[in-house]
Amino acid sequence: MTAESDRITRDSLVDALRDLQADIDRDTQPLLVKVAYGAAAAASVLIGLAYLLGRRAGRLRRTVVEVRRV
Image 1 (cartoon, helix red, strand yellow):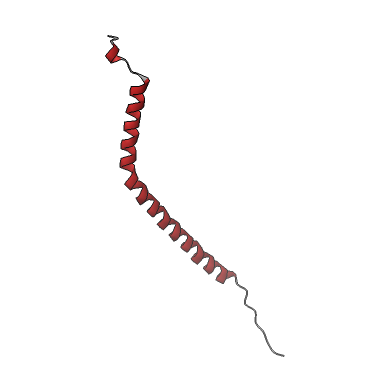
Image 2 (cartoon, one colour):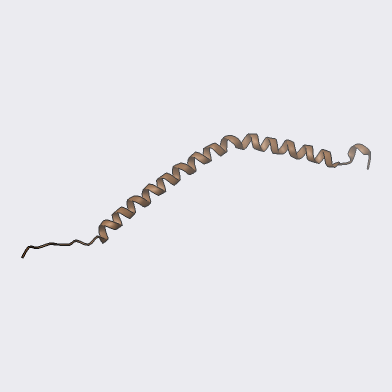
């Protein structure tokens, strides 16, 4: 049962993990590009929304000064 071919060596584990990492990297690379574009778009929308809401709030709190000539 403990034949030399059945033993798991450090090198066989390293090779298997490198193969697994290569497969994961190959599969996730296109997804990372899509996630980056989505995050950039979401950030742009949030910044624009914050700007517009801040502008509106500034208008509502603005003091109106009336100048009269005497």
